[in-house]
Amino acid sequence: MNPHQHNKGLLRVLPPRMNFLNVMAIVILVFLLITGIYSQFAEVPADKKSISLSVLASDIQKGNITSLTLQGDEISAAYIDGSITKTNKEVDASLTETLVRFGVSQTQLASTTIVVKEPSGFGYWLVQLGPFLAPLIFIAFFIWILSRQVKGAGVQALSFGQSKARITMPNDQKQKVTFKDVAGAKEAKQELLEIVDFLRNPKKFIEIGAEIPKGVLLMGAPGTGKTLLARAVAGEANVAFFAISGSEFVEMFVGVGASRVRDLFKMAKEAAPAIVFVDEIDAVGRARGSGMGGGNDEREQTLNQILVEMDGFEPNEKVIVMAATNRPDVLDSALLRPGRFDRRVVIDLPDRGDREAILKVHSVKKQLADDVNVSVIAERTPGFSGADLASLMNEAAILAAREDRTTIGQFDLIRSIEKVMLGPERRSHILSVKEKEITAYHEAGHAIVSSVLPYADPVHKISIISRGRAAGYTLKLPLEDRKLQSRKEFLDDIAVSLGGYVAEQMMFGDLTTGASNDLQVSTALARDMVTRYGMSEKIGPVALQAASGRVMFGSGVNDRDYSERVAAEIDSEITRIMTEARSQAEKVLTDHKKVFEMIAKRLIEVETIEREEYEKILVAQGISMKQKSGQPEVETLHA
Image 1 (cartoon, helix red, strand yellow):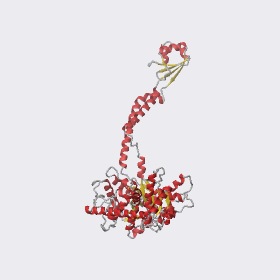
Image 2 (image 1 turned 30 degrees about the horizontal axis):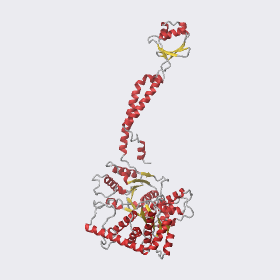
Image 3 (image 1 turned 180 degrees about the vertical axis):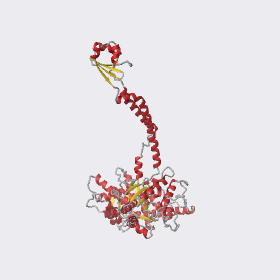
Image 4 (image 1 turned 135 degrees about the vertical axis):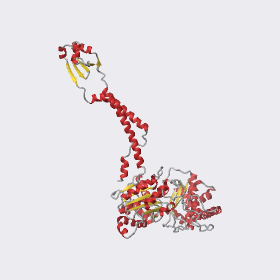
C-alpha cells in the first residue's frame, strides 16, 4: 500500500462543503441537546403540591400524613390518599424541632415515618453543576470544531502536491499482467524483453558497463495496447508498477505538477526496482516555446521537473520510466534525446494473425457456440485495434444475452463488427418512401463504382438500415492487410466516395445533404495527396503540410509556410482531382446503369444485400470479380 495514500485517507477531515454556517448549526443543535438533558434532571415533578409548614403540622396532627421524606432542606409528605406535597424546613433548625414549634407532639411524630435522604448521586451533582458546565461544554465543542477545520485545511494543503499514482505491487496476483495476456505486438514485446531482463538481473549489464535505457516511449494509435504492454513488462519483471496520467500532474496552482513529479519519483526510488508509467505524456510533454501559457506555464514546469528527474538517475537505480502517447510528433525534443526517452517502441495496428490471437484472448471467458470461427472475424476486421476487438467480443456477448441465448454465435460476432464501426441499428429511424429510394441509389452508386474500378476494395455488404448517424452504408473490406497505398488507389477511393453523390444527381436531378460526409472525406484525401504525399504533378514532390497538430519552432498549427500563389495552386489541384474522380464515377454508373438500378431496387426491397448475393448479381451482368486490396473503409450516407 502506498504510505502517502494511506496517510491521506487517515487525515481526511470534514467534508469540503461544510462551511461556517454548517458548523454553527451543529453547535446550536448540540447546545439545545445539552439544555434538554439538563432540564430533564432539573425539572420539578408536576404532581408535588407546595404547602406551608403550618399546614404540614396541622395535617400531621390530624393523622392525614403517613410519612415524611427529608432531602436537604426539602420535605416531601405522603398522605393517606396517596397524594404528595412538599415544603421547605427552617434552615437553622432540625425537622423535629420545626414541627414541635408548630405544635406537633412527640406522640404524633412517633406515629409518622420520617426518612432522611442524603443529597448525593449523579443527578444531584448535575443539577448543582449544570448551570456552570453547560456553557463550558458548549464553548469547548465550538473551539474543537474550528480547530478540526483549520487542521483539515492544513493537511489538505500539505497533501496537495503528493503524487496520485496508482500502484500495483509485485505480489498483487489479481492485477498482474504478463506477456501471455498480450496477443500480437511481437516486435514490441521482443524490444521490451531487454527491459525485463535488466530489471530481473541488472548485475550482468552493470558489470559489462552497459546502461539500460532510462526511458521507454510507447508510440501507437489509440487502443493498440500501450498501457497493457507497460503493465506486462512490470508483471514479467515482477516489480512495482506506478501508473499515472499526464493530465494528473496539471492543477490550477503553479508548482503542484512539479511537486507531484518529485513525489512520484521519490516513491519509485524507495520501491526500486520499479517501473514508472506516464500515460498520455503529451498532456505535459508538448514542445516548449510555443507561446501558450507564458514562461510560467504549469505544463512547462512539470515537463522541466520530469526532465530533471530522468537525468538524475544513476545506472544502478533500477527505476525505468515508461510513457505512452499517440502523438509523438508534438513532444518536446528534450524528452526524446539520448538519456531520456531514448528507446522508442512503435506499436502498430494488429495484422490478420494478431487480430485472430487477440480475439482468442478476449474469448477465453466467453461462452462461444460451435459455429464460431475467429479467423473469419479477423479477416473482416482490418484496421481494428486491440480495444476495438475487445469491444467487438463484448458487444457480441451483449447481443446474445439480450436474445436470451447462453452462447455467442458467429452471427453475433458478424453483427457486432458493424455495431463497433458504425453504431447500433436504428430501426425506429423510419425513412419515407422517397428518402428510402434516394438512400438505396446512393449506396448502390458507391457499390458499383467500387466493384468496377480496378484499385478499389471489394464490397462485402450494402445496407439502407440506419446505424449511428448513417442513414445507410456500404461496407468495403480489403482481401489482405497492407501498409502502403498508391496514387491510383487513392484516386479510385475518391471516385468511390463520390459514387453516391453522382448517383443522386443522375437519377433524381438533385442533390441532398446525405453526401456531406463523402465530400468531406474525399476532399481531405485529395488535399493530403497534394500537400503531404507529393502525388500532384503540378505541385511536385513537395510536402507543404506538417503532421496534424505539430508545433515547430513556436509556429502554431494554422500557420503555413507557403505563398498565396501556391495556396491557389493547391486549391486548383484539389478541384481537378475531385472533378476527374466525379467524371470517372459518372462514366462507371452510365456504362453499368442496368446493374446499378437492379442493385438499388433490390436494396429497396430487402434493405440489406450481403456479399454473396451482390457478387452473383454482378457476375450475372458480366462484371468479373477481381482480387483487390486496400485499407478498410465504409462509405456512408448521413441523414
